[in-house]
Structures are given as C-alpha cells and as structure tokens.
Image (cartoon, rainbow, N blue to C red; front, top):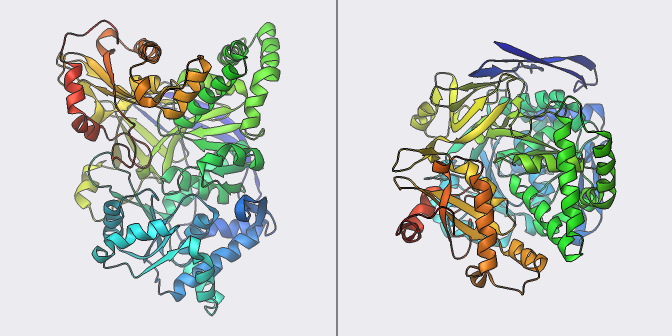
Length: 631
C-alpha cells in the first residue's frame, strides 16, 4: 500500500480557517480520498445559496449582459436570491408541487441558473434538455421524466415541443424565455407568501432527488440519471475545500451547455465557493465575452483548447510570425516539462521563456481575458503536448474525469499536484478501483442513486457498491488515474489485437484540418480511420500555407491537404504499436454533427451509427491490401 499526502490551507464555507492535509491511499488497483466536509443529512442545495447570502448579501454572485450585448452588470447575492424567490413563487402559483418535475430547454444564460435554483426553492426537481434536441429526444425526456412545466428559450424550441405535445400527457405548461417567461412567473407569484418558499426550501434532504440529467447517449435512448441534493451539495463543498486557490476570488464564464452535468456542477460549485459567475450563450462571441468578463478559471472540453492553439498558429502565419510562434511554443513546452524535473528550468530556459512570454504567450493569455490561471478540462484527453503548452503559457489545465452518473468530477489534477497526461487524484469522498479487466469502478457520495424508471439498467451498472463506468484506466503508485479507453469501444482486429481507438483519434483530431476522426477495424485485418475536415480550420490552414481558397469538397482531393493529414496520422501512429497503427484512412463528405445524428449533444461520436452509416466507405478501405502508411 502506497500513501501520498498533500498539504493544504483553505477557508471553510462559513469563514473558519482550516489547515490540514489530504491523504490519498493508493495501491495498484484502488485509491480513495477522505471526505473533508460532512453535511447534515437534513441539508440540501438551497443551503448553499443561504450560506452565501449569510456571509455577504451585497457580494457579487454573477455578472450578466445588458440588452443588445451591452456592458456586463453585477448581480449581488441578494439580488440573485430575490430573483430565485420571485420565480420560485411563480412556479408555486402555476401549480408546481414539491417533487414535481420542471424542464429547462435553453442555451447557457443567467436565467438558466435562476430557474435551476428557483425549482429547488419550490421543492421541485429540475430536468435539463439540450437546446439542440430533436423532437423525438424532447418527447422521450418529457414523457420519461413526466415533466409538468417546461421553460424553453425561443419560439423555435416551442415549435419543437409542439410537434410532440400530443404525446406528452404530463406537460401542462410551456413558457418561453424570449417572450418574458421570468417576468411572467414573477407576476404570477406576487401573491404567494415568502413563508411558502421558506417552507419548501427546507423540505428536501441530502437523499432526495434534485435533478434528472439525461445522458446524451452514444447508443439507444438516453437514460435519466437521478442525482440527489447530496450528490451535488457534498461534492461542491468538498471541492471548494479541496482546491481553494481556484475559487478564492474566482470568476468563471460558463459557455458549455448547462444541460450537461459538467457545466451544471460548476454552476453549483460557483455558488458554494463565492465565485462570480458569467454566462456566454453564443460561442461565436466567446472571445469578446472572455476579454470583457476576464475569468480567472475556465472549464472546457479538449476541442476548445485545440481550436485556440490552432487559431493562434494560423494568425501567426498570416502575420508572418509563424517561426517565432513555433519557437515560443517549443519554449513553453520545454519550460513546463522542466518544472516536473528535480532541477526545474535552467537559467537559459527561464530567460527564453520570459522572451517568449513577451512576444507570444502574453498575447494568447489576453485572448482568454488576461486573468485566467486555471482551466478544468474534461470529456476526453487533452494530450501531453497541449497540456505542457498551456502550462507554459501560464494557464494550468487541470484535467479531470467523471461522468453524469458521478455528478461530473471523480478525479482531478490539483494546482500543486499535477501529472500531465493523467486525470488526477480522487476527489474528497471518492474512491476508484480498477477491475481485473481494466474497467474503472467508482464509489462515493457523488454516485447517482439510479436510472429513472429503469431498475434493470441500474442493477447492471453496479457491482455491489461500485459503479461500473465502462471506461478503462490505470492507477499509478501515487493514486493518479489515467484513462486508456472505453470498454465497449475496444476494437478487436481479425488478428486478435485489442485497439483502444481514443488514443489514435484524439491525436489525429488535434490537427487544425481535422474535425472528427473515427477509428475502425473490428474483425478486419488492420486498423483504418474515417476523417472529416474542419471548415474553419481549413480556411486558416490554406491561408497559412499560401494556398487559394478551397471548399471542403475541393479540399478532399487536394494533394497538400492529403499530405498534411498523412503526417497527422503518422504522428498519431507513433503513440501505438505497429499492429495498432492506422494503415489507411478515408475522407467523409461533410462533417459529423448533432443534426445528422452522428454526434451526441455533448459532441461525442455515436460510433455504431457512424459505422452503419458509412459501411460502404469502410468497405472500400479494406478492398485492397494495406499500405505501410496512410497514403
């Protein structure tokens, strides 16, 4: 048994200074971290806002955009609470009873967070729906969750709901944010006494249902994950205690969909941790929003970090400074890697890093608002090279791991204890076990209580008290977890070789030209790949290389584009054995999207759907003997 201890000094939620240490006990197949904060069994998520209110009613809880993309306006804790109470009263006036299910279908915006806390204030259960959901998906969630009242964002969302309204008998009311849903609810609840909300806020306990989050589902219908008040609240307060340097004086801008558990958890932990919260509903204005809001920490998926890097590289090429950019990139990576050695960066490297910072790296930090020190990345591996690049830039990317069923984070790298390439140490109160076949099993207060209306799936998901994640991983002696693949996505070639496609796909997808990469090869003689081009990346890449504009269709047959993807595939192949390497690839017309059914709302590839939809293209890949490289 190996034991690792990490010292911390932090501030408790009610202001008491706490100094201590976190001890992670780990051996080759199991690791766990103790709970730092125990909550009373009678508490619930409403208490997080009450605690924030008691310590600073005039403190800023959020900043929101004015009308027509005007300036950001501060919202105090007291003002936010008043909004929550007013909307909660409106829900009560509309007949929402304790335990009823209320749906939210909207982009990430201030009103989403108000509605979430108002639903809990009314004693009800929130049911998020991705704003990109199809009528069939909306129908399934509304009926399976028995949603009583639904708030949507736009008239288009209303039209989607109306297509299936006849098949959703539980749905009584649909309100539209763009048509003044918040004002309507506030007016409806004007005569509801404050005491009604006070009483309802105290009804739920830690074991009671807080929300049903539907997995985006790479296969079959999405399952409703039942998450309790305790799942969110316990993990949130322990996270604040665990990494105080991220939350102390923190500001974060949410742009990922709040229908996903990752963004939702950060919404809750921001309220618990005294963070100023912003919302960015339109990713097209994200750079402008970050420059104005100036977050101190971000949460994003690896694709966001890849695009930021690729965009910066292309702008450098357009400005004639590509060689300087690449030198600064190498310097940042070398400086970060040196931090992990006993000696640290040499004097010469430190001087080079300062010059690189002045010429290139500081400008990139400015794109992120200039104040961001940390970013939390999840949903897939970032990659060792980009991890070191961003740390060299001054933005430490804390890769973590979690699922909807674990209320988002189960493990995360810490500011003072990071192993780039891993997904970090277990969160307080979380335990991780590696089964004999390599599957990651989880246990702790953050694990969901079951799938809604699906006891069979719930039973299959557990091995005793351990939740089966379906992911494959490994633990090192220090308790750091590394993800190696997805159990159900392991490809077995005709020669019996087991291949984890994610290791190859993530590396190929990091190229500026690539939007998606899907590795295939089940029962085939070798591994191949299907690749789609990124239209945005294509335009920048063509400009960077002095080539004329090409449509994505024209680029599919361009020899230079093909050669660049060849090189990307060859670089990816260096990370695996020869038997696991990609021997051939094919370009797919168009891209894989949520709209055409090949991606889930959280941008995960529906692998089985892709394999079925492009069976002919896959067949042609294996129509002749393989070549040594992807040509």
